[in-house]
Length: 195
Image (cartoon, rainbow, N blue to C red; front, side, top):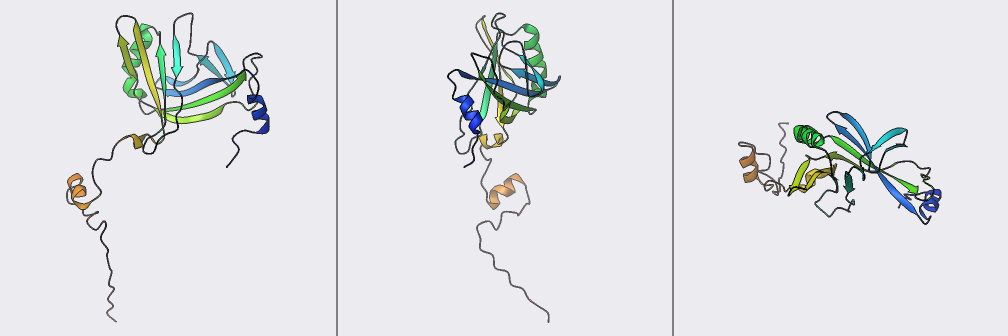
């Protein structure tokens, strides 16, 4: 098994007040966005990242944990934004179909909360994936959220197969195709020579 962390990284992670910051590089219709889950702007990995949380303005972002996928399922990360303005909601509604399928990479960075020192290893790419179509949810007059799901490259595993792998089902899907007529049948080839 390979070591994911060097001795220097393990020593940094062993400090008493280490936290993680999330960074997302999103390919949106308006261009490439680099966002982090904090407040203000931050420099990391040679790029400037814009904070999307604003507790004073009421906008908060939650990012779900990346769970180890079970057999037959792909891993995913849910990003939920709450407390946004009307212009943001309109743009999400207008560009929802254009957003689906674009790439999204999630990174994390460890830092010491007491000294604000980031570890020397820089950003670690945790989750390369693709964006799902955004979901707008509301409840009553005060709760509005926009949820995005970043699906892993194996997202097609989340859909059931649409049939059986036999000749009859293959002809139902593709009339006239005989590609699976001999699936599961022992075939013997006899080569005849004219000589």
